[in-house]
Image (cartoon, rainbow, N blue to C red; front, side):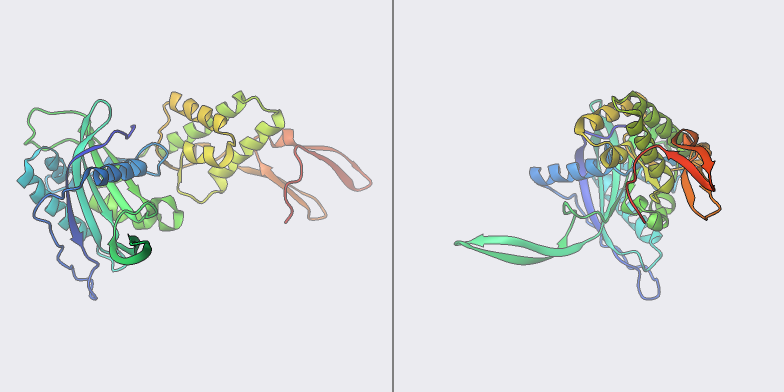
Length: 355
């Protein structure tokens, strides 16, 4: 689902706090009116959200699992259609729900941003919830030829700040009775959380997308990972490169899928890391889009291709070992014979490193 051309119509900020010494809930500070941003500020916020959720990002499209009357999904859906007073009241409920779900003292407080608007060239209504942590820093002031620094204790959403989470519901079907409960199939959900980008912190992301938003990772991860593998291998075969260069790229693909500890993969990441020139990267991006592959990150699940990603090895009586990917191993490693107790082995490629 492309995520671009975001226009925010209404926005409101609330503040939630870290749990107390005995894990007791600290009451949130609720805004009683909409937040007003000037045009540059609004444009910057919209671009930050698109960067987090759009093409090439680490956002993930998820399934909406909890859709009962008291679910965050239903409460968020009401924010799309209600008048200003209702939007303010429902946004306070959404912020309070997030504070309730933050049960661990390891989870910091922060600002909860609730916004609604439209996205896409064929505009679709959307509602988003962002939790951003507050940081400290400095800005510069210029006066009469002097440059000084001013300390700021409440910086939010700076260009280098990644410590935020975003959940957004995009309406796919408009219904006549908007007072009725909405169905998950009428919306698509996208979630961005910096914690999902690393295996060691992925668990920390669950309270936001699972416990709070009521979403789950799509069960199609196995198929999408297989599609990524097959489509990328197909692209490599079309390149105007030598057989040796193509084998090297296929080994890069193996490394990216099998050896990397990252829990997500994306065509953008693979292109940036392995495909070299901008022309090849652009061609690969067009190839993957043409195959209908998501432009956002997907959860990596190699279940369907694990046999293709197995390693093969040779162990000699001298304890020397040769290890490589099973696919193409026989073509790249050829035993030519044994002479006087020495095995003559021909290996495709050149020595790149020694350990």
